[in-house]
Image (cartoon, rainbow, N blue to C red; front, side, top):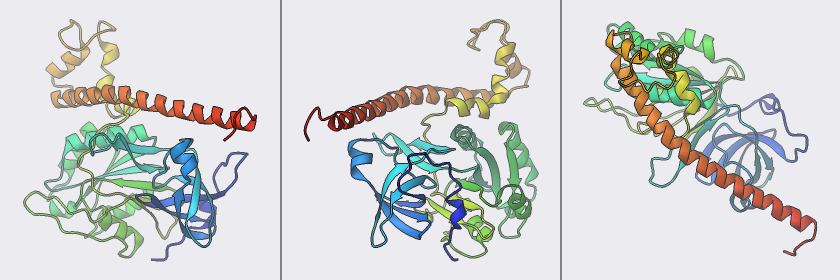
Length: 352
């Protein structure tokens, strides 16, 4: 498959007035080296050390980010600025003490993929949906391998019960079932979709079918637990023949929350709709009289499992908010110091 991005896809950006540098988009991240596409084609780049590491003036970019670069035709270009994002997905880094892990940026839809085998897990799906709403994009649930079950409708209903306001699709890359409607609804020119799901759910297989040829490696899954090998080892942005773009990601079973204040309300709008119906505004939904939440649980209107999932994610959200606030305040402090230092140098108040 020819790796080509039409130039207009890069230059439809609203660039800052004082822009200097060449606009580019990050298509893959390899540790400290970035693959980019710009008006000159594909190139590689590295972060400018003084801006990203010493002065800490810019957010570290990830796959899908638009950046400005000092283009170098004979070697690695320098990335000098991360442009404003319209959407951003991150998680708590699974490595101890590593903080936030950026996953993808600047996408329109999140395809939350689960296969109709032993991988099907509503609790994990609720996490993905919560984080998807928080990212600023629109979540869509994709149930893969529909050819493995006699009746996929019961799975779709189970998802619709917890995925309020979210589109749900059942597909099969083997038979082609459901693919036309999926492509027609979401995979349109200039739109970017990010794929999320565990290893073995069929992310890479779907990429290959949509691209019309095999561009992603595919691995087998274990029959005893339906777990797959990590055939996608890094996040990569791929252009489809019709101009739609896909960000494929490695399988993620461990999905630690990082910052989900807004996403939680969107993902559990059915739960929070009961709060205004409680007798007391400060109701804690435990033993208070006139609690609409407890009443809905007791009469079967609100599933107890749904309420427990909400409470669990709410506890994680409160922990994440405290940690996120501290780290963001620290980052702003570093930026303020760097700006004052540059201003003092400019005014000649101290020598380098």
